[in-house]
Length: 348
Ligand code: SAH
Ligand code: SF4
Image (cartoon, rainbow, N blue to C red; front, side):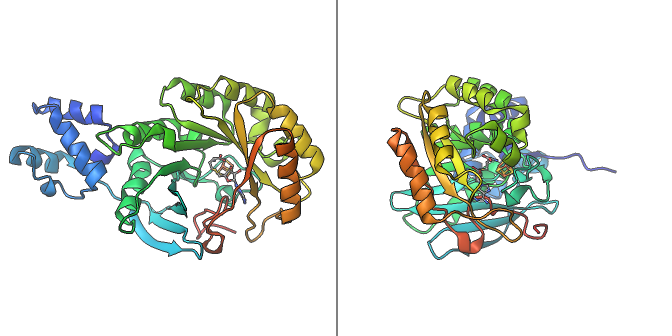
């Protein structure tokens, strides 16, 4: 006989918890109490929820579970970056990366095991998509990272730039974001969360309409459709003009700008003419550009440009009065940098 699947409390938003409690005849505020245990305290056992009546705890024990990612280890890079490695209950491996900077501690989260978007320069996609992460598996990366921080540390920023394309797992990602931003659950300020996408235009528009007030980053990576289509097959479906028009319409918070990520690939998209063309295209947008010198991996088809080439590219953007920063990719020595995350058993 198949055992009926029990509800995972970590998958539930605060309103859903309240509804569940009401169906059992309990007061709604119990839902907020449970949310604090599950998402704030990171409680693994219902028995530990001391402020709940015994009968309610028993019902919870019978009908629900609190899932946890199994942590396989934490790798520490020379620059202080930490890679947290997890195994999903059915096997696939995923990773989060903790990046420490002087004034920030950023957690980079995964939304899928693998990715099916197929960008030529990205290791994550080489073995395709293993599977979508459930909301619980997205949210638990935060709960577990918090539990592993050093004394005195606290997470200041979240970026959805780990494994996977967040908008290819749209419903689960948005549901997770509602848990993450709910004050009684994870309680993270939307202003400190950035979701990065390779450019799924309808999802960008829909995401803007959700009213979550989050920061948006776009992996642009090319100044024209010819180069972008070569690097990112998704550009055939939604070319640059359509993408930039969705960006133009995205409801940004006060004083916020869209980030355009641009991986610099030697000889491919890193020439002065490319910088000029990029600057022209972005002129009308409230945006900044984040240049990411390519992080090489075994079998990669591209090379990282020299520091001079990177600087020349940046200087041209700055000359056009664009904000342009160079992302110093962290944790390269432990394979934790942009584009290096993969299920290590399946990478080339
Ligand atoms: N799928 C989403 C979220 C992942 S973000 C997206 O693509 O936006 C991962 C970022 O790292 C993207 O901006 C991507 O362009 C960049 N990236 C991928 N592979 C890289 C590599 N090998 N070196 C440097 N940056 C890379
Ligand atoms: Fe997927 Fe993003 Fe990698 Fe492209 S860059 S393959 S969308 S994870």
